[in-house]
Length: 151
Image 1 (cartoon, rainbow, N blue to C red):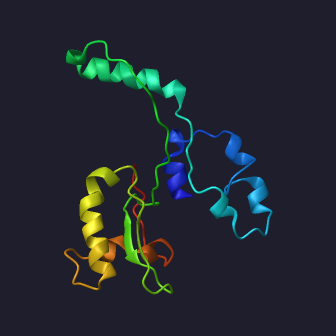
Image 2: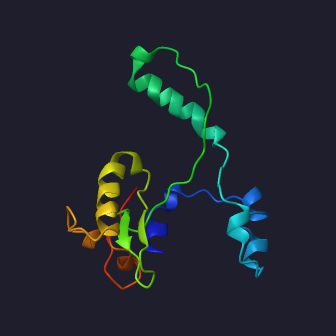
Image 3: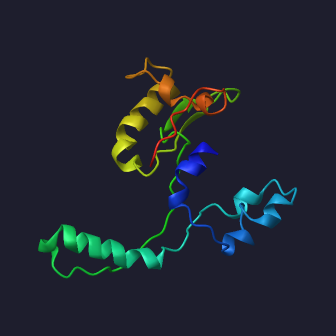
């Protein structure tokens, strides 16, 4: 709830196709189908058309040397994030051999190489290059105080 309240200005609620089909739909919540996630493996939302033009205008103002750039195509996607906007790179308690690396809050392109290296070290049980404690999955459920950060 603190994350939701802090980020409320960035929240847009709506009902789309995912409400009636897919693993996150109302019918999926009411089914006992344990294969629902196998049937819809890729979440590919449409881009927010109302947002494309303002972004182009902002780019034009910030970088006037780009002239009259045009958008050839647009893509929509989901940002995976944690309540504290700190990624998870962690062995998963109770599931031997599973290492989770997720929740980069849109910063995965820049953080990816380092997080991947840390994840690889955890997979083979090498001494980690950095202290992995801040990235542990359990912090999200063990009562640790989280600094609810902006993304």
